[in-house]
Image (tube, rainbow, N blue to C red):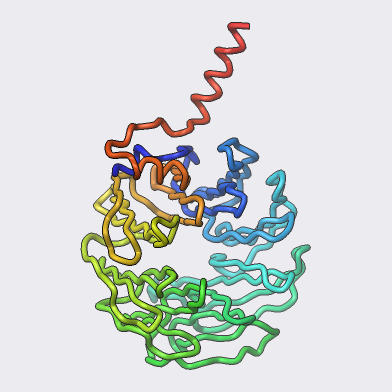
Length: 358
């Protein structure tokens, strides 16, 4: 099936998309490289648009507030209106943010061009009002934050590698990795709590090395049976929770992947592979690897999926959404009919034409 014919909604952020986020109610957020953040409701209507200082790299929502990382700043916005409530400058780039036990945990890092490496990082805690509670500086960059059994863990780069427990105030306890290589990414979901390393190891904080892949781990996705891992060389593997190989595929570099929807009691794995300035997005059965749908798009920068929806953000500013009901209806048809995605600009024009007729 051609994925373009099954799209539910298409929007344009007006700048390269750096982040997408789906709320449980179906609302969509998209953040850009120039600092724009837009929220659309579950019907595709624009609720608000907010302009911040710089590239948006992370977003966390709690109650009536959304907190984002924007360039050097941590910015809090009203969830209902997008109005800025406060902004705090961190040291270096603001990389990640999480709500944790009613407060805000943020990560920042300083990159040195001459050394071609990160020379200092910091973990910060702020109150909901933006008041700094503490800051812990370190030589390593925290590359991934994951929640594990009531603990918030940060996977580290060199020199220490391994992970630290951010659940309480500093100093933080440090755990050495099973292999002495930097953490590159992490994921928590279902029963899986995983870190990926530069040597290809996929490790769990409580059970050592689950698998060793052919290259540095770039991204991880939790699945009902286990997990999917992709490397910097375009090698994708799907494994059981014990690390046993189920299926694999090789090809162009993988920019991102996620789990979204379920068919015949099997979840679907969405994988974006970069081909120059464009991407191929494929949807496969997570159990067998059978490709059910694919499509070509502008270069895909980010993706997120839930049981009901999947959203991607592209280099050209496109924000594209698939809804499970429409996707499955198209998939079940022998020859899917193309349905135009819900276009906000077209809808506004049609409304004006109706008003002129009255």
